Image 1: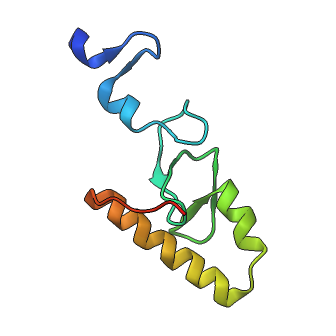
Image 2 (image 1 turned 90 degrees about the vertical axis):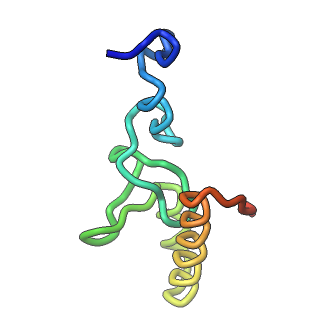
Length: 94
């Protein structure tokens, strides 16, 4: 049960669930962050790249176009941006 102040009637979601919606489709609850762009992603809008990591479909397309060295740099830079986001720091999305 949620009080009226913390419930979005239009989306039929509580404030906590609304905060964790997928930032790609804005419909499903997210399951993780994309380590490359830092967006919250749901299972439908992500690709599992190994047993542990998932990336959004947009970053996955970019990743396939890069040679292996650039893939590692792209992934690591995204992971750093994600860590800053989770810790509450500001970062440049560029």
